[in-house]
Image (cartoon, rainbow over all chains, first blue to last red; front, side, top):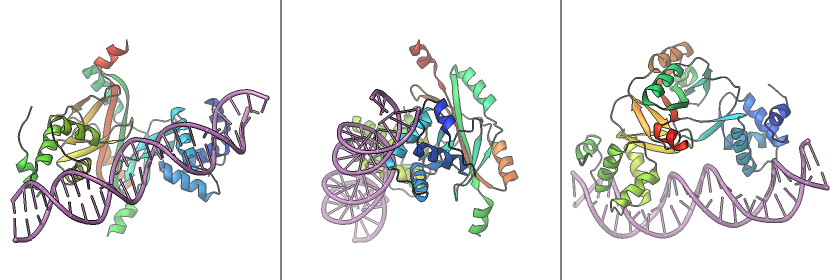
Length: 143
Length: 143
DNA sequence: CTTTATGCAAAGAGTTTGCAATAGA
DNA sequence: TCTATTGCAAACTCTTTGCATAAAG
Protein backbone atom coordinates (compact mmCIF):
# COMPACT_ATOMS: atom_id res chain seq x y z
CA UNK A 1 0.00 0.00 0.00
CA UNK A 2 1.65 3.20 -1.20
CA UNK A 3 0.95 6.24 0.95
CA UNK A 4 2.84 9.07 -0.74
CA UNK A 5 1.08 12.37 -1.29
CA UNK A 6 1.81 12.79 -5.03
CA UNK A 7 2.81 16.41 -4.55
CA UNK A 8 5.73 16.10 -6.95
CA UNK A 9 3.70 14.40 -9.64
CA UNK A 10 1.08 17.15 -9.47
CA UNK A 11 3.57 20.01 -9.38
CA UNK A 12 5.54 18.64 -12.32
CA UNK A 13 2.37 19.04 -14.34
CA UNK A 14 1.70 22.51 -13.00
CA UNK A 15 -1.27 21.32 -10.96
CA UNK A 16 -1.85 22.49 -7.44
CA UNK A 17 -1.61 19.97 -4.68
CA UNK A 18 -4.92 19.38 -2.91
CA UNK A 19 -6.13 16.70 -0.55
CA UNK A 20 -8.70 15.47 -3.06
CA UNK A 21 -6.20 15.09 -5.87
CA UNK A 22 -3.74 13.39 -3.61
CA UNK A 23 -6.36 10.93 -2.42
CA UNK A 24 -7.56 10.17 -5.93
CA UNK A 25 -4.05 9.42 -7.13
CA UNK A 26 -3.39 7.22 -4.12
CA UNK A 27 -6.61 5.30 -4.70
CA UNK A 28 -5.79 4.73 -8.36
CA UNK A 29 -2.15 3.90 -7.68
CA UNK A 30 -3.29 1.16 -5.31
CA UNK A 31 -6.25 -0.09 -7.32
CA UNK A 32 -5.93 -3.52 -8.91
CA UNK A 33 -7.98 -2.36 -11.89
CA UNK A 34 -9.26 0.78 -13.59
CA UNK A 35 -12.04 2.50 -11.64
CA UNK A 36 -15.13 4.37 -12.78
CA UNK A 37 -15.95 7.86 -11.53
CA UNK A 38 -18.56 6.42 -9.21
CA UNK A 39 -16.15 3.87 -7.76
CA UNK A 40 -13.55 6.57 -7.11
CA UNK A 41 -16.17 8.76 -5.47
CA UNK A 42 -17.38 5.93 -3.22
CA UNK A 43 -13.84 4.98 -2.19
CA UNK A 44 -13.20 8.58 -1.21
CA UNK A 45 -16.37 8.64 0.89
CA UNK A 46 -15.27 5.42 2.56
CA UNK A 47 -12.04 7.10 3.55
CA UNK A 48 -14.03 9.89 5.15
CA UNK A 49 -13.66 12.50 2.40
CA UNK A 50 -16.47 15.01 1.91
CA UNK A 51 -15.60 15.50 -1.76
CA UNK A 52 -18.42 16.29 -4.16
CA UNK A 53 -19.10 14.31 -7.26
CA UNK A 54 -18.50 17.24 -9.57
CA UNK A 55 -15.01 17.62 -8.14
CA UNK A 56 -14.28 14.02 -9.05
CA UNK A 57 -15.44 14.65 -12.61
CA UNK A 58 -13.37 17.81 -12.90
CA UNK A 59 -10.34 16.22 -11.31
CA UNK A 60 -10.39 13.17 -13.54
CA UNK A 61 -10.56 15.39 -16.58
CA UNK A 62 -7.57 17.40 -15.39
CA UNK A 63 -5.55 14.33 -14.43
CA UNK A 64 -6.26 12.72 -17.79
CA UNK A 65 -5.33 15.91 -19.63
CA UNK A 66 -2.05 16.02 -17.73
CA UNK A 67 -1.44 12.33 -18.29
CA UNK A 68 -1.20 11.41 -14.63
CA UNK A 69 -3.97 8.91 -15.27
CA UNK A 70 -5.13 6.98 -18.33
CA UNK A 71 -8.75 6.72 -19.39
CA UNK A 72 -9.88 3.33 -20.63
CA UNK A 73 -13.14 1.43 -21.04
CA UNK A 74 -14.16 -2.21 -21.10
CA UNK A 75 -16.34 -3.52 -23.85
CA UNK A 76 -19.19 -4.74 -21.63
CA UNK A 77 -20.44 -1.21 -21.01
CA UNK A 78 -17.90 1.18 -22.55
CA UNK A 79 -17.99 3.34 -19.44
CA UNK A 80 -14.88 5.43 -18.80
CA UNK A 81 -12.54 4.03 -16.22
CA UNK A 82 -9.31 5.49 -14.95
CA UNK A 83 -6.00 3.93 -14.03
CA UNK A 84 -2.81 5.36 -12.61
CA UNK A 85 -0.34 6.09 -15.38
CA UNK A 86 2.79 4.05 -14.69
CA UNK A 87 4.37 5.23 -17.92
CA UNK A 88 4.87 1.78 -19.35
CA UNK A 89 3.06 0.58 -22.41
CA UNK A 90 0.86 -2.30 -21.36
CA UNK A 91 -2.41 -4.06 -21.95
CA UNK A 92 -5.07 -5.61 -19.79
CA UNK A 93 -6.54 -9.06 -19.55
CA UNK A 94 -10.01 -8.40 -18.20
CA UNK A 95 -12.30 -10.91 -16.51
CA UNK A 96 -15.76 -10.73 -18.06
CA UNK A 97 -17.24 -12.01 -14.82
CA UNK A 98 -15.77 -9.73 -12.15
CA UNK A 99 -13.77 -7.12 -14.13
CA UNK A 100 -10.59 -8.08 -12.32
CA UNK A 101 -7.60 -7.32 -14.53
CA UNK A 102 -4.13 -8.67 -15.09
CA UNK A 103 -1.73 -6.33 -16.83
CA UNK A 104 0.90 -7.44 -19.30
CA UNK A 105 3.73 -5.45 -20.74
CA UNK A 106 4.50 -7.26 -23.94
CA UNK A 107 2.55 -6.03 -26.91
CA UNK A 108 1.85 -7.81 -30.18
CA UNK A 109 0.32 -4.72 -31.79
CA UNK A 110 3.17 -2.25 -32.08
CA UNK A 111 4.81 -3.51 -35.28
CA UNK A 112 1.51 -4.44 -36.80
CA UNK A 113 0.16 -0.94 -36.22
CA UNK A 114 3.22 0.67 -37.73
CA UNK A 115 3.10 -1.32 -40.93
CA UNK A 116 -0.66 -0.94 -41.27
CA UNK A 117 -0.38 2.82 -40.94
CA UNK A 118 2.48 2.90 -43.41
CA UNK A 119 0.46 0.92 -45.92
CA UNK A 120 -2.64 3.12 -45.50
CA UNK A 121 -0.67 6.38 -45.38
CA UNK A 122 -1.93 7.14 -41.88
CA UNK A 123 0.22 8.82 -39.28
CA UNK A 124 0.16 6.41 -36.34
CA UNK A 125 -1.00 7.94 -33.06
CA UNK A 126 -1.66 4.88 -30.92
CA UNK A 127 -3.72 1.80 -30.31
CA UNK A 128 -5.98 0.21 -27.77
CA UNK A 129 -6.35 -3.44 -26.96
CA UNK A 130 -7.82 -5.54 -24.23
CA UNK A 131 -8.11 -9.31 -23.93
CA UNK A 132 -11.26 -10.71 -22.32
CA UNK A 133 -11.64 -13.99 -20.51
CA UNK A 134 -13.03 -15.67 -17.42
CA UNK A 135 -10.70 -15.70 -14.44
CA UNK A 136 -10.03 -18.87 -12.41
CA UNK A 137 -12.28 -17.71 -9.53
CA UNK A 138 -15.22 -16.92 -11.79
CA UNK A 139 -14.72 -20.21 -13.61
CA UNK A 140 -14.99 -22.21 -10.41
CA UNK A 141 -17.92 -20.16 -9.11
CA UNK A 142 -19.82 -20.97 -12.28
CA UNK A 143 -19.58 -24.68 -11.66
CA UNK B 1 -25.24 0.77 -52.33
CA UNK B 2 -26.99 -2.34 -51.11
CA UNK B 3 -30.78 -2.12 -51.08
CA UNK B 4 -31.93 -5.49 -49.77
CA UNK B 5 -34.58 -5.61 -47.05
CA UNK B 6 -32.76 -7.90 -44.57
CA UNK B 7 -35.89 -9.98 -44.03
CA UNK B 8 -33.92 -13.24 -44.05
CA UNK B 9 -31.30 -11.98 -41.64
CA UNK B 10 -33.98 -10.88 -39.20
CA UNK B 11 -36.06 -14.05 -39.52
CA UNK B 12 -33.05 -16.29 -39.03
CA UNK B 13 -32.65 -14.68 -35.62
CA UNK B 14 -36.34 -14.99 -34.84
CA UNK B 15 -36.85 -11.25 -35.13
CA UNK B 16 -39.86 -9.79 -36.86
CA UNK B 17 -39.29 -7.86 -40.03
CA UNK B 18 -40.20 -4.18 -39.70
CA UNK B 19 -39.45 -1.14 -41.84
CA UNK B 20 -37.40 0.42 -39.07
CA UNK B 21 -35.22 -2.62 -38.59
CA UNK B 22 -34.74 -3.01 -42.29
CA UNK B 23 -33.72 0.62 -42.65
CA UNK B 24 -31.30 0.46 -39.73
CA UNK B 25 -29.57 -2.61 -41.13
CA UNK B 26 -29.35 -1.02 -44.56
CA UNK B 27 -27.86 2.15 -43.12
CA UNK B 28 -25.27 0.20 -41.16
CA UNK B 29 -24.49 -2.16 -44.01
CA UNK B 30 -23.69 0.84 -46.19
CA UNK B 31 -21.92 2.94 -43.58
CA UNK B 32 -18.17 3.40 -43.97
CA UNK B 33 -17.75 3.39 -40.21
CA UNK B 34 -19.57 2.50 -37.00
CA UNK B 35 -22.41 4.87 -36.17
CA UNK B 36 -23.71 6.19 -32.87
CA UNK B 37 -27.38 5.98 -31.91
CA UNK B 38 -27.81 9.63 -32.72
CA UNK B 39 -26.21 9.28 -36.15
CA UNK B 40 -28.45 6.34 -36.98
CA UNK B 41 -31.51 8.28 -35.83
CA UNK B 42 -30.58 11.31 -37.93
CA UNK B 43 -29.92 9.23 -41.03
CA UNK B 44 -33.35 7.65 -40.65
CA UNK B 45 -34.96 11.08 -40.38
CA UNK B 46 -33.10 12.18 -43.50
CA UNK B 47 -34.61 9.26 -45.33
CA UNK B 48 -38.06 10.41 -44.25
CA UNK B 49 -38.61 7.95 -41.43
CA UNK B 50 -40.77 9.02 -38.50
CA UNK B 51 -39.04 6.62 -36.12
CA UNK B 52 -38.73 7.60 -32.49
CA UNK B 53 -35.45 7.68 -30.65
CA UNK B 54 -36.54 5.06 -28.14
CA UNK B 55 -37.17 2.65 -30.97
CA UNK B 56 -33.62 3.14 -32.16
CA UNK B 57 -32.31 2.38 -28.70
CA UNK B 58 -34.49 -0.71 -28.38
CA UNK B 59 -33.67 -1.90 -31.86
CA UNK B 60 -29.93 -1.54 -31.44
CA UNK B 61 -30.10 -3.53 -28.24
CA UNK B 62 -32.02 -6.31 -29.97
CA UNK B 63 -29.76 -6.33 -33.03
CA UNK B 64 -26.67 -6.48 -30.83
CA UNK B 65 -28.16 -9.27 -28.74
CA UNK B 66 -28.89 -11.22 -31.91
CA UNK B 67 -25.45 -10.47 -33.32
CA UNK B 68 -26.69 -8.81 -36.47
CA UNK B 69 -24.62 -5.79 -35.47
CA UNK B 70 -21.51 -5.32 -33.35
CA UNK B 71 -21.16 -2.68 -30.68
CA UNK B 72 -17.82 -0.91 -30.52
CA UNK B 73 -16.44 2.37 -29.19
CA UNK B 74 -13.55 4.64 -30.04
CA UNK B 75 -11.22 5.82 -27.35
CA UNK B 76 -11.81 9.55 -27.88
CA UNK B 77 -15.22 9.44 -26.21
CA UNK B 78 -16.00 5.76 -25.54
CA UNK B 79 -19.52 6.24 -26.90
CA UNK B 80 -21.20 3.12 -28.21
CA UNK B 81 -21.18 2.80 -31.97
CA UNK B 82 -22.68 0.10 -34.10
CA UNK B 83 -21.49 -1.62 -37.24
CA UNK B 84 -23.06 -4.23 -39.48
CA UNK B 85 -21.79 -7.69 -38.53
CA UNK B 86 -20.10 -9.16 -41.59
CA UNK B 87 -19.12 -12.25 -39.63
CA UNK B 88 -15.42 -11.91 -40.25
CA UNK B 89 -12.98 -11.22 -37.49
CA UNK B 90 -11.47 -7.84 -38.19
CA UNK B 91 -10.09 -4.67 -36.66
CA UNK B 92 -10.35 -0.99 -37.40
CA UNK B 93 -7.81 1.67 -38.16
CA UNK B 94 -9.54 4.84 -36.96
CA UNK B 95 -8.70 8.40 -37.95
CA UNK B 96 -8.43 10.55 -34.84
CA UNK B 97 -9.36 13.58 -36.92
CA UNK B 98 -12.52 12.53 -38.74
CA UNK B 99 -13.32 9.07 -37.34
CA UNK B 100 -13.13 7.57 -40.79
CA UNK B 101 -12.17 3.91 -40.53
CA UNK B 102 -10.30 1.34 -42.57
CA UNK B 103 -10.97 -2.27 -41.69
CA UNK B 104 -8.36 -4.99 -41.79
CA UNK B 105 -8.85 -8.70 -41.51
CA UNK B 106 -5.50 -9.92 -40.31
CA UNK B 107 -5.11 -10.00 -36.58
CA UNK B 108 -1.92 -10.04 -34.53
CA UNK B 109 -3.78 -10.67 -31.27
CA UNK B 110 -5.30 -14.12 -31.65
CA UNK B 111 -2.30 -16.27 -30.72
CA UNK B 112 -1.09 -13.79 -28.16
CA UNK B 113 -4.48 -13.82 -26.43
CA UNK B 114 -4.60 -17.60 -26.38
CA UNK B 115 -1.19 -18.02 -24.78
CA UNK B 116 -1.78 -15.20 -22.30
CA UNK B 117 -5.05 -16.78 -21.17
CA UNK B 118 -3.38 -20.16 -20.92
CA UNK B 119 -0.62 -18.74 -18.76
CA UNK B 120 -3.06 -16.89 -16.48
CA UNK B 121 -5.56 -19.74 -16.34
CA UNK B 122 -8.28 -17.58 -17.87
CA UNK B 123 -10.82 -18.96 -20.29
CA UNK B 124 -10.47 -16.77 -23.39
CA UNK B 125 -13.68 -15.09 -24.51
CA UNK B 126 -12.42 -12.48 -26.96
CA UNK B 127 -10.47 -9.31 -27.48
CA UNK B 128 -10.84 -5.80 -28.72
CA UNK B 129 -8.34 -3.70 -30.59
CA UNK B 130 -8.28 -0.53 -32.61
CA UNK B 131 -5.39 1.30 -34.20
CA UNK B 132 -5.51 5.10 -34.20
CA UNK B 133 -3.88 7.44 -36.66
CA UNK B 134 -4.35 10.50 -38.82
CA UNK B 135 -5.69 9.80 -42.29
CA UNK B 136 -4.13 11.32 -45.43
CA UNK B 137 -6.94 13.87 -45.81
CA UNK B 138 -6.70 15.08 -42.24
CA UNK B 139 -2.93 15.22 -42.52
CA UNK B 140 -3.08 17.54 -45.52
CA UNK B 141 -5.87 19.65 -44.02
CA UNK B 142 -3.69 20.25 -41.00
CA UNK B 143 -0.92 21.78 -43.09
C1' DC C 1 -56.12 -13.34 -33.71
C1' DT C 2 -52.07 -13.17 -30.97
C1' DT C 3 -47.77 -11.40 -30.13
C1' DT C 4 -44.23 -8.23 -30.75
C1' DA C 5 -42.82 -3.56 -32.05
C1' DT C 6 -43.54 1.31 -31.76
C1' DG C 7 -44.59 6.23 -30.22
C1' DC C 8 -45.00 9.24 -26.71
C1' DA C 9 -44.17 11.18 -22.50
C1' DA C 10 -42.18 10.76 -18.22
C1' DA C 11 -38.64 9.09 -15.33
C1' DG C 12 -33.87 7.92 -14.38
C1' DA C 13 -28.82 8.08 -15.00
C1' DG C 14 -24.80 10.23 -15.79
C1' DT C 15 -22.36 14.55 -16.64
C1' DT C 16 -21.56 19.54 -16.95
C1' DT C 17 -21.79 24.36 -15.48
C1' DG C 18 -22.29 28.96 -12.90
C1' DC C 19 -21.26 31.10 -8.99
C1' DA C 20 -20.01 32.03 -4.33
C1' DA C 21 -16.99 30.26 -0.75
C1' DT C 22 -12.50 28.08 0.29
C1' DA C 23 -7.87 26.61 0.28
C1' DG C 24 -3.18 26.44 -1.79
C1' DA C 25 1.17 28.82 -2.80
C1' DT D 1 -2.96 38.25 -1.42
C1' DC D 2 -4.04 36.21 -5.64
C1' DT D 3 -5.57 32.46 -8.23
C1' DA D 4 -7.08 27.83 -8.79
C1' DT D 5 -10.10 24.52 -6.65
C1' DT D 6 -14.27 23.06 -4.55
C1' DG D 7 -19.32 22.48 -3.10
C1' DC D 8 -23.83 23.02 -4.23
C1' DA D 9 -27.67 23.22 -6.98
C1' DA D 10 -29.44 23.61 -11.32
C1' DA D 11 -29.19 22.50 -16.02
C1' DC D 12 -28.32 19.28 -19.60
C1' DT D 13 -27.72 15.14 -22.21
C1' DC D 14 -28.24 10.45 -22.81
C1' DT D 15 -30.87 6.32 -21.96
C1' DT D 16 -34.64 3.54 -20.12
C1' DT D 17 -39.45 2.46 -19.04
C1' DG D 18 -44.74 2.10 -18.84
C1' DC D 19 -48.52 1.98 -21.31
C1' DA D 20 -51.75 2.45 -25.05
C1' DT D 21 -51.81 1.82 -30.12
C1' DA D 22 -50.22 -0.21 -34.38
C1' DA D 23 -48.18 -3.63 -37.18
C1' DA D 24 -46.35 -8.33 -38.19
C1' DG D 25 -47.17 -13.12 -38.99
